[in-house]
Length: 474
Image (cartoon, rainbow, N blue to C red; front, side, top):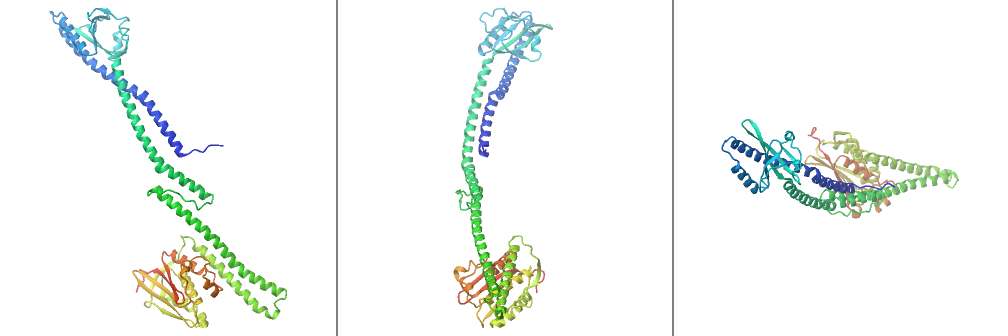
């Protein structure tokens, strides 16, 4: 089975690899570069000293009275003040003078001296042709007198001095690296605490949500981007959980509202077929069946309307139209129903015309649903008031009845699909419980608001807003 890897593990591995590579770089590449630079710097310093001695020696050799004793004394003093060893060497490789030797004896170097070795570089590192038991940095400067090369000034300095300085610098580099590594560990700890651990909780929550556990709560209490992400995911899970509950209720309500009329239709038809209902009463029960089919048709159409409106990006056919005229036309369609129930309309409309910018057909549907609802729950010999007002570039449309009212604990639920109050279940047998849901969806699609004010036994008022037309104003 393939083992799962995490970004955090990769980060730790990369962090350790970086540390190891940094150590190797300090120990190898950087050390060698610094060592070479220090050797070159020391060699340049020695060469400058050798050249100065060579020039002085050359001038003294040109003097006929020069014995060399004073010059050698000066070289001995220089040797005693520094860690360098100064030689005067003949052209054949014989050491004529060695400042580090008390007697300054004449010696010869063990290996053959080759001046050409100094052509590529002005210094060499090693035992100088076997003359030293340790590595030294050696520079050579020729002594010229009377246009002839008379000797060489050779200056040696122990390489261990450079190595000691390099060791000190390397220790400083390692100490600095250790400090930087320690500081980066603090950053890593902060990263683990502030980012990694909360992200682990969020990842676990995502797995829980995927598995269907929408009740899982992400325990991340931070006021930053990660905290806000956790809060958003908690809210999302809560909304999904509520949506799941609403879906179950929706399916239960749809099943109930379809099953009831279908049961009635089947019962009446079977009774007519088997003779339980005599032929002379068929017309009565066929009318009942017809009413039930109309109820099913209305329910189906409402569901289709809700399905089309449920998308936030609902396409609206927006235009400028006279809302007062639309209200008059919609009210006229209820004249027959109002006549039967002895219900009157009172239209209080602002101005002769009042233009708004909206989808005219959908606003007609809103008005139809609200007026139809008002008629259903109004008692006989009552008045339904429809009013328009304008304020701050908004048009307010109100539909107010003096019917049975809505219980206070039901006001927040009336917009839910299939919701019916206990009062409405007894009074409205044909309602689908979808009219107000459709109404709210349409108003929301216009990015407007709809509110309800209701008192039991007094009546109910629905108020919604529309944008006033800017192009066609009185």
